[in-house]
Image 1 (cartoon, helix red, strand yellow):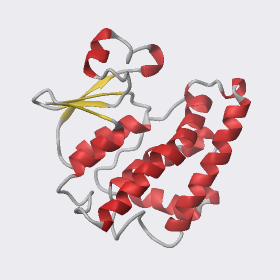
Image 2: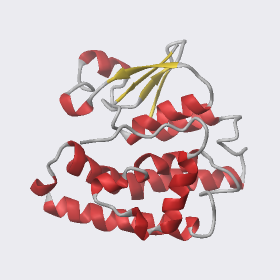
Image 3: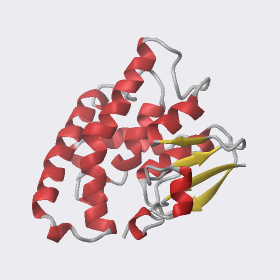
Length: 202
């Protein structure tokens, strides 16, 4: 059976489990807490020398790392990923946006505020997270204020990637009511059959 190493409160790890659920692939979850050294053990580093979760190990022992690569792999030949061409390129654009302009701020604000509970120790970092996170949500609002989904006419892995930390952005101090298009999109994705929300921090 497919094995997933991950942290239950991590949005990046949630992506791996969620795409497996949505595509009907059974898997076993191996809780691996990177904040307490679980990703730095010799056993884990033998699987992923980069020392990060999520990690997926296939039935034949093949290892897949990086959350968005995992999304793409399991979404292939499903409705969650368009065929090669401009439609798929549009999905890729949002996946890169998520990792470089969204996750580093919204996820970090959540971790410092609700999980590590060290936000007061890092005021400059938190201020940057709030500023850049708001910018990312505003970019999403420009699209989602006029469209149901980030690309095309239905949800794709682009939506899953951005949903991971957006639907718990309040745990980092972001108010989604300021972004009605984003809030409505979160509600639409939450209602998709098979969707399971991220474990709450705190």
